Amino acid sequence: MSMKVSTNMFFDKSSKMLSNVQSAMAKTQEQLTTGLQITKPSDEPVKAAGVTRLNTEIARQTTYQDNMKTISTRLSAEETALSNSSDVMYRMKELAMQAANDTLSPVDRKTVAQEMTQLRDQMLSLANSQDSNGNFLFAGSKVGQIPFKQDPKGLIVYAGDQSRMQVAIGDSRHMSLNMVGTDAFHNVIRADGKGGNTGIGFFQSMDDMIASVNNSDKVGIQRGIGELDQLQQGLSNATAKLGTDQNTIDSQNKVLDEMLLRLKSTLSDVQDLDYTQAITKLNKDQLALESAQSSFAKISKLSLFNYIN
Image (cartoon, rainbow, N blue to C red; front, side, top):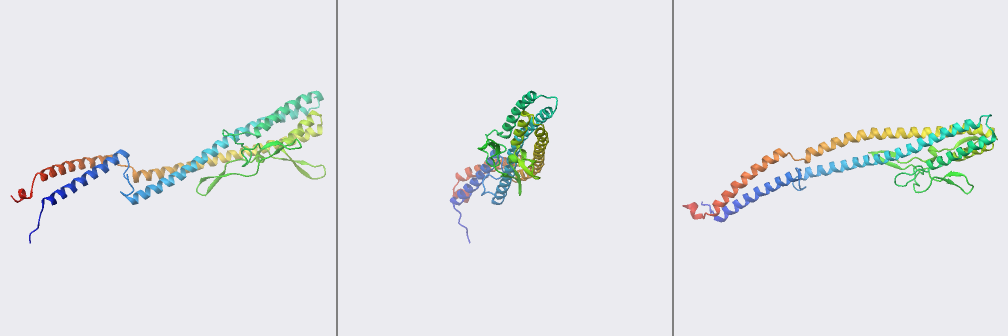
């Protein structure tokens, strides 16, 4: 049995070999350009799917870190406002103690009351602090509304809500983004004179204290001193809460940093190119291409009769 051999067969085989070598070189060159092993999902579908999953996981963990940056910035702003509020309250307490001194005259107490009024206004401004975006820090979820303002009776009341906005900082882990105004500037408990107690607003307590000093009401002054201690304790508790939240942020950031490091290391192993290996392969492909081109050039000059002869 004889096998028929045609010149076209030689051309076809040589052309196919030349095309394969050129394709291999093109792929290696693309890998070197991008620095990636997988330049097209169709090249290695399983690895490509793994890369997609890793990138999705990295993006989710990065989102958690971005959320914590937002919370941390908010905590810092709230801490500054509460720290300044505590300073105001300490000065308010000093003035109250002066006003309680029997050596002060009614005129002196009116002078003290004037400074206390200025401090009260400063405290109101701090309670209505805003962040860099103009959102009120202590308004609950009503960040676009002033949290502490006058009601129709002229009393300063809390106009925010009690909503604590939850933000994800990890898988199944959340933190509050905001502090409700009444958590820091909370009511005080005052005897109602009937054997019971009643809640008095933060700023109403301060205003009552100022009125007592202005009128040299010694009983009211003593009551106000006790209430100032309650107000100061509320600010201290709120500041401590912010410190605890910041510690939580720092701890969770360390966890996410380690997780992201592992994920990125795994991703690098899967998709990053080994340049030494790729360059070696490119050189081999180059030699193969030159050999294929040389062979094709020789074959293209021959006919079947040359092979027969």
